[in-house]
Image (cartoon, rainbow, N blue to C red; front, top):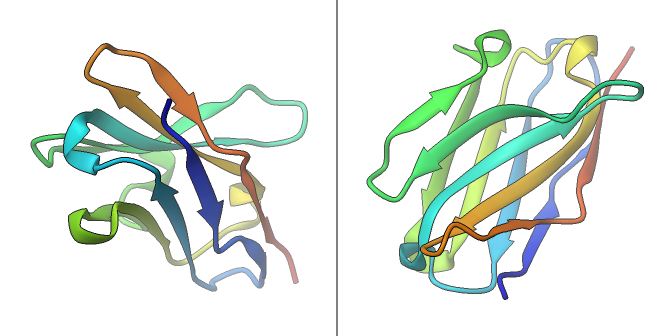
Length: 116
């Protein structure tokens, strides 16, 4: 069982920045991929950014150039750096991990609110 704990959410003004962290309970090397998803009220959960075991990354078109996913293997932590935040980025952000058997795990989510 993989446990994921997100942190770093909060209230930020449009144009501001936040960095989300996802602490993983096992070595990241044991995972096939990790990702950040988000879910806004009344909308489906959507993929924001992902990073594979080999380090390849992918992003939703809506966040390209503004969000960066990264990881610290020594700390077993995955990050999502968000800049130039927009009100439409407001959502609960979830960390996701896929293990070597393709089992999926989710964190509890962290709220990001972009508002003036």
